[in-house]
Amino acid sequence: MIVASVPNVKTIVREVWKPLVVLIVWDVAVTVFYVISPFKAPSLPLTLFGSALALFLGFRSNSAYQRWWEGRVLWGALINASRSLARNAIAFLGRDDPRARAIILQQIAYVHALRCQLRRQPLDEKVYAFVPKDEAEALLQTQNPANSLLEGTGRRVADALRAGQIDTIQQVHLDAILVDVANAQGGMERLKNTPLPNQYRFVPALFTRLFCLLLPIGLVETLGLVTPIGSTVASLMFLAVFAIGEDLTDPFGNSVHDLPLSSMSRTVEANLLQSLGEEAPPPLLPDNGVLW
Image (cartoon, rainbow, N blue to C red):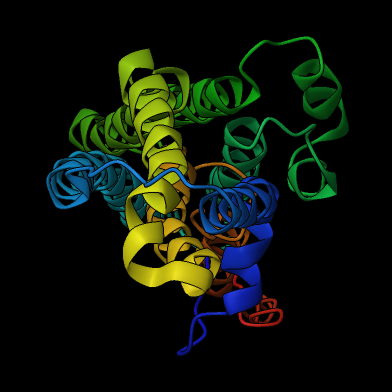
C-alpha cells in the first residue's frame, strides 16, 4: 500500500507506459497525416464520449475500491479477534499455562498462513516458527493451511474443557471468537476467489482504448501540431483511472496498491507476543513510500 504523502508519478507511468507509447506514435501519425494531406478531420462529439467514459470508469473504480475497503475491514476484524483470543486465553488459563501459550502462538501462525494463502505464496518461515514440528509438516498436506491451524486451536480449547481448565461458558466464549476469525477468513476468500464480472474488466478496457484512439482525430483541427501533447495528457488521465480500478479489484495481491498484509500480520504477531510477556518484533516500515 502506498503511504507516501505525494504520489509517485513514476509508479503511475510505469503501469501505463506501454499503451501510452503506442498512443503517442498514433497521435503523431494522425497529426502528420492531417497536416500534410488535404483531408479535414471529422467532427467528433468527444465531450459526450469523454463524459460517458468518465462516468463508467468512475463507477468501476468505486466498485473496485469497495472491494479494497471491505478487505481492510475484514482484516481489521481479524486483528481484533486475534487480540481477544489471546486476552481471553490468558484470562481463563493463565499466562504461564502451556495450552494458553500454544493457542496464542498458533493464532500468530494462522495469521501468517492466511497472509500467504491470500497472496498465493508458499508458506514462509513465520508460519513454521510458531507451531510444533509435527503440525508444521502436516500443514504441507492440506489445501487450506490457515483453516487447519484454526481447527487445531479449536481442538486445544476442547482439550482445555475436557481437562477441567475452563468451563462450558468460557469454552463457548472462546469458540465465538474462533467463529469471528473463520467468518473474517471466509469473507477474504470470497473477495479473493470472486473477481469482478468480466464485463467490468473487458468493456472499460475496450472503451478506454477506443476513446484514446479517437481523441487525436477530434483534436487535430483545434490543436494542430500540439495535438500529440494534448492527446497524450488526456489519454494518460483515462488510462491511469482505468489502471487504478484494475489494481484495486484484488486487495490481497502483492503489488504496491494492495493491502499491507505483511505489516498487519506483524502487528498481530507483536501484540500477541507482548501478551505472553515476550519481546515483540518492531513494526514494518515503509519501503520507498510503500508499506507491504
